[in-house]
Length: 96
Image (tube, rainbow, N blue to C red; front, side, top):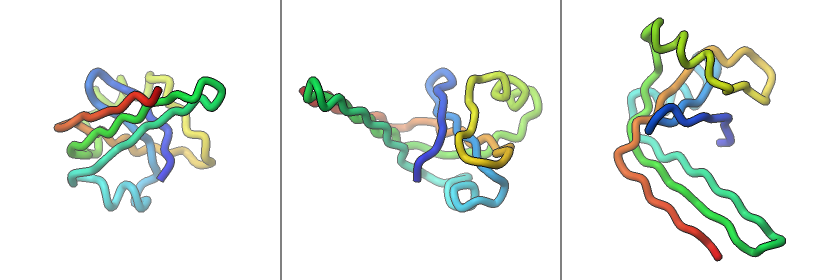
């Protein structure tokens, strides 16, 4: 499922709607998060896979800090829920 994200230190932060599918299925569970990029002109790219636990951020101090990140949703809606993925495994591949 496509999401907007930002790195926060070693963690990945995403925003979603309360009780959305991603909120219900990811919160408190092990998840996989993948980011890819391809440059067809240069025929190269990369792929990163992060596996870890997703937790809903509820601490008001941490939420205030995360709200200052440049993490704006592209889809309509407020997306007030912040999920943090705490990596356990990170793998990647450069395609040249």
